[in-house]
Image (cartoon, rainbow, N blue to C red; front, side, top):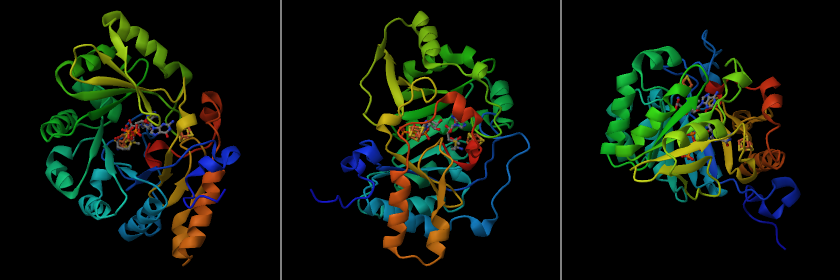
Length: 338
Ligand SMILES: Nc1nc2c(ncn2[C@@H]2O[C@H](COP(=O)(O)OP(=O)(O)OP(=O)(O)O)[C@@H](O)[C@H]2O)c(=O)[nH]1
Ligand SMILES: C[S@@+](CC[C@H](N)C(=O)[O-])C[C@H]1O[C@@H](n2cnc3c(N)ncnc32)[C@H](O)[C@@H]1O
Ligand code: SF4
Ligand code: SF4
């Protein structure tokens, strides 16, 4: 049998790759953000990387090209807040020109979405996920430590109006903060074609994660089923992060991202590049490789590919379990990008 050309297509290296094919790259465009979400970063902020050590636009595009050449067909732009990068529209337009890239997606806090959406759509943005953790303005402000609830709602409505479907809404559920709003979020899917995704609270440096604050998938499901017993499990895609449900008769649907209580590592197709240029093969793995340094050393494409291939082959079968990852040293989430 010949060796596969694509280094990420690790299906033929079973004991190393665990049968996973990495076709989805998450690229962080910035470490900065206009919100300060409690679950994502410490109140005092994070130590930002000096500008000269962040990936330039040209380096981002070079890496994107390389990964696409090797089999990546979906790129999600994230951050920090990707929409505060001044050339985000240009980056999307350049990515759109790359043959082989099927999907360009973004995960955003929605603060500047309504304003930027026409340009983002023109540039070629395919999919939008928007974070929203409360439907109560004062609680929203408490969780994100900033004002802006109405701007985010405006962004969500604008995305629907401009034909994005589904618009995904990410809600990190935390006990004592917003778990009492589960049913209100579900009700939002009655008339709007949204996919509301309830995310189990995950541990990262500086976010004060604690098992007791985490609301599990099963607990959320039980709560929603009391109100809507006809909640139906739909078929999810093999590599999806979310388990998808629908209340019969509702326009939208629900997703549960169960990284803690029922991980989906077996079908993981994701790689990450941080804003400072590190390849991170697992959200909960702290071994990183600086692609920025390799690029800047003048390495050949082949050398770069070998380094990336070796990192991908070191990727573990699954994360180490919620208690182990809550003890490990990792970046704060804002410096990873989700
Ligand atoms: N454990 C784990 N969580 C992930 C992974 N990818 C995304 N998430 C989490 O899923 C939540 C939603 O992330 P998004 O940025 O919306 O991305 P996504 O779920 O991959 O989006 P889709 O492309 O729409 O499926 C965030 O809390 C992410 O941290 C992953 O590979 N592993
Ligand atoms: C780090 S943010 C970056 C993109 C953008 N600023 C936003 O908020 O959508 C990406 C996603 O990670 C999620 N996230 C952040 N911290 C998390 C945590 N501790 N547990 C689960 N999800 C988290 C956010 O809710 C968001 O949907
Ligand atoms: S979740 Fe997104 S919006 Fe909130 S602080 Fe983190 S990067 Fe910013
Ligand atoms: S925890 Fe790591 S291996 Fe598991 S799904 Fe997330 S990125 Fe993939």
